[in-house]
Length: 217
Image 1: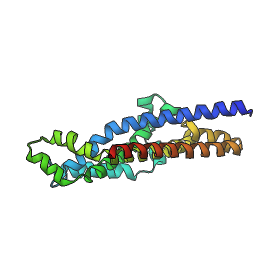
Image 2: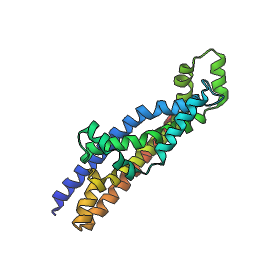
Image 3: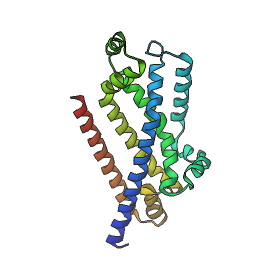
Image 4: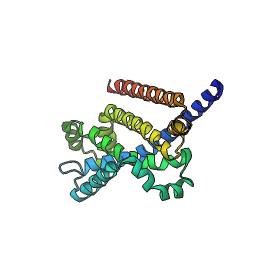
């Protein structure tokens, strides 16, 4: 394989990986964040305690997090085909990636919101703030640096999951490593994909740390 063709193929795989991870992260944040908030505020002693709702949501998230991604990838194939119209390529991976990320995001949000000083919440309640106002004007702003670090960790995990999806033709760097590195015995391609994945993770983590540090001030 010529060097130009190799660069073209690697660049295309990088873009596919970034696309599938980026879309999955955004959808997972939109769906997982409210779930995490509900788990926190329905806990006993919080602003809207509801023992049964808290238990149901927490159990659901635990079940979602306990399923290995490779099993989830196969288990949701009918849903993936229904929503994406295909089970292969970049589009075919976004659905399982998103489903895998939602419970992870929920726990990240839960952990971050629990770090907020209870005294701040009590002060907001004493001033007559509604539960919705406490969530959007107290809990989320106070937990923002931790939320950013948690969301960064989610994206990093999804990069690893996206590479795993290459086993079933999921597209991106993982698929490239399987097709060229494994099936065609081109070991150099495998190493290139590994290096690129490491660089992507490092850059993403550095960006997340930088944003969190800025928000903490």
